[in-house]
Image (cartoon, rainbow, N blue to C red; front, side, top):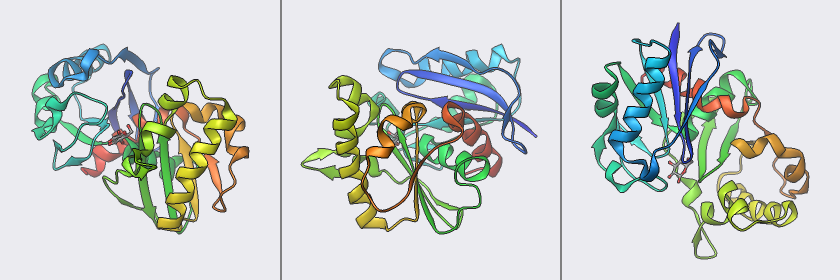
Amino acid sequence: MQILGIDVGGSGIKGAPVNIETGELLAERIRIKTPAKAEPEPVAEVVKQIAQSFRWDGPIGIGFPAPIKAGVTTMAANVSEKWIGINADALFTKITGCDCTLVNDADAAGLAEMVFGAGRGQPGTVIMLTLGTGIGTAIFHRGHLLPNTEFGHLEIDGEDAEFRASDAARQREDLSWKKYAKRLNKYLKRMEKLFWPDLFIVGGGISKEHEKFLPLLTIETPVIPAQLLNQAGIVGAALAARKGM
Ligand code: BGC
């Protein structure tokens, strides 16, 4: 079965048709810059543009950086506040003319890693973290997802964890890998003490450079890089649309 997977991010909106049995992208992905302010209609128009470039009229799965409850975006950290409380599923479906299903972006990336990537066959508790504009979290136990966890907003030293330890924070403050690893370590230590996971998987664009910071971490839980890199969000969004989450 083929589903168009879309990953809405703080800086870019990416998409490609996905074979959800194999997790393969069926065409090269398209990336369009996220419209300034990331407001609902302009973002939905970009998704429509991506669907049209693939001449797509089938189902679409959309990973979005907010908790999603029955299609409604309930919070907005790195996108316009206009998303709060709207039925985004219905908006995307209306604008694209295709059947759209929304899922939290980190949940999508985590699903893809659990099915096709670094989390495959991992028993116990696995925490997927996406380090990008924000920090996204997806928590799995025996392969089952607890959706919409928002531990990027865990308060550390009086601030949102993502404000200190996301990849955007690293770039904004021009942190060395050593300094960045120290911050990430502090965050992971807190997560470790709260959840006692068996494994952390680190994804997001920064995972391409995992050799520069993962070896500097000192927590006890194993931390491994994601395998699907920048495809995880697209593949997972397509998977979630099939599951109708
Ligand atoms: C949002 C999450 C999202 C994460 C990664 C956070 O700011 O609140 O919903 O998963 O960023 O994009």
